[in-house]
Image (spheres, rainbow, N blue to C red):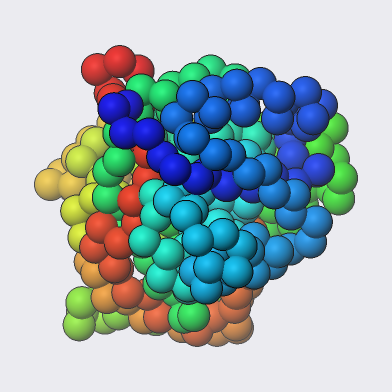
Length: 307
């Protein structure tokens, strides 16, 4: 990276997935201080704190020269920073340092899952623009999901995720698939309506969800569109199918149990009303309206030829 930032702010919270957060901060700041003339380290004590700090940055109450913000944390913490930047119209890039269980969008940025290596990679990164989904009054970078994906998250016992990480999801996934809940949906994508009775619906901007990659090879978070996947009642068929790579041209012809729809303006209602997972956090309920904001967010990205 040729650019040297004036003032970067690194957000973190003490309940990060990193075993010793303070040792981790020391490792991360070694890298960030080489690309920032001034680096502030800001603890987020409660949910919503990062959004409040973004408002202070916008109003110059925090500092008058902040020109980059970093987040050390998992997908939910990244989502909070995205909301802070978008809601307060901060015209600054974001640097993501993985510190959670899955760190889905950091994979999209070609960053190593190890926070030390990822912070080193930021030194050689460049700024790219990415689409953002506006979901009702919230902003979402990676995905929106309901049905099995929410059911699975709720089946993971409280606190167990921090201890066992990804392993805690294996038993939960089996339990969820053995007893899925079905719901009626009505979906409108760019003026075309769809309806039915299904087990899960996922709307993806990024290609990685829950630690795995969606096998739609031309899925891009930079094309002004999102990808809706509708899962029918054939849960175990879906498991076999989801690992087969394909592109959007032939997805619906060769995929059993999962329909794919592309678009940029979406409305979704369900019966009954359903909880909605946004980037790993259960924070909304149907009905929802989604609008794609093309290339609305600047994020530091590691070059793919160096990844």
